[in-house]
Amino acid sequence: LENLNSLLFILFAGFKNYLPSPSREQILFHRPRGLQCISPLVQSVEETPEPIPARIKGHIPKWINGNLLRNGPGKFEFGNDNFNHWFDGMALLHQFQLAHGTVSYRSRFLQSSSYVRNRQHSRIVASEFGTLALPDPCQSLFGRFLARFEPLQPSDNSSVNYVLYKGDYYVSNETVFMHKVDPETLETKEKVDWSKFIAVNGATAHPHYEADGTAYNMGNSYGKHGSSYNIIRVPPQEPGQGDTLEGAKVLCSIPPMDRAKPSYYHSFGMTENYIIFIEQPLRMNLLKIITSKLRGKAIFDGISWEPQHNTHFHVVNKNTGEVLPGLWCSKPFVTFHQINAFEEQGCVVLDLCCQDEGTSLALYTLQNMRRSGEGLDQVYASIPRAFPRRFVLPLDVDSDTPVGKNLNPLPHSQAKAVKGADGKVWCTHENLHPEGFEKVGGLEFPQINYRGYNGRRYRYFYGCGFGHLVGDSLIKVDVETKNFKVR
Image (cartoon, rainbow, N blue to C red; front, side):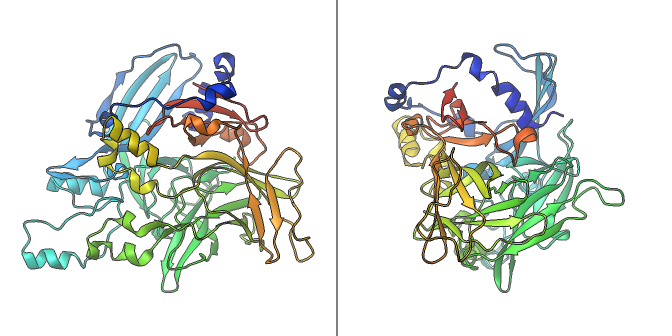
């Protein structure tokens, strides 16, 4: 199978041959076109387990061969029960098989316990991020009352991403469960529980990989003393080891600023020698989440944006597990996807897609997504935009480092890192886009040529432009010149 990021790189690389660079005037006076409706994009569909030929517009080079695998929500109701949030839909696995200029498509629903149980009962019996499963209406009144006190079970609806461990393909969300799948047939093979191998209560759906197959990830753990952020290493396939997560270990644990309200995070950065974790003021109130069923609330009710707190960067030596003693911080922002990170002249350079507000998660309800006309435009206008930014974290900072001086030594970067009297290094970002880029609507879901440049200095990345509520363009960005091209 082709590596997904490499395939995207190949497909997008031709942009430079035919995409004009917008002028500043074109950017400044661009306005997103109104969409009458995107409701068909958030409706339930049927699976297509047998391959069907896809219609092709344009030309696909015959030398691009492999499977493009995608994952996402595909079913939004069972019986008379409806999910509330876009993220709640049952995982539908997609495969686009490219062979000699042709494409075939197939899809299958992940046979998770959540999906199977919901289908068997013809109602929603498993709670999701934005939907609280209600007690069985056939139970007695007392039975329904007692059901409120049952512990909230984590969903195994792995609808976020494909991940790779020891050469095997899994689909993942952000709970303790993943599912091994067959990348050729999309059949569900095995459910894997992270907590059976290491002391974590989940892991992100965006791990990083070494060339030899070693994978790194992050996951929270919760105990009597509160929560911890954990750096995880999963070894490549080796003789004598099992084929799931055997051999996985926690490299280190990082205490949150507030153990009762740890930061929500979706991804992290990795260079040749370091893991970079961004602790942002998008907080998970553990008490609210644990009691959500009792209170009759969905899980996302326990996640809050707290801009009174700054964003902090934690740097971990991934070879030793040592947490570097430096204290790097910036103004509050939220990031869901990192672009790339690398080391240069004693600094970590960290590129991220950033939002200045953390209110977007609660806005992607199906009610909002299914609005039309001006109502849909109003939803789009209320969602914070994400933009590519660069931070430079100088690593060699101690008591002798001068206060008030910009510690960024990189001549090609305008980012600032200034040590304060309290010993913290205040980091001010550099925009990885030209003036006026904000008018194109923001950029998310960044991709690089991962195999060639992850953890290394690079020049280009690619992402989705958001001229409206869903991605409506492909954007190529030159991080050195800040020029970009849109299709």
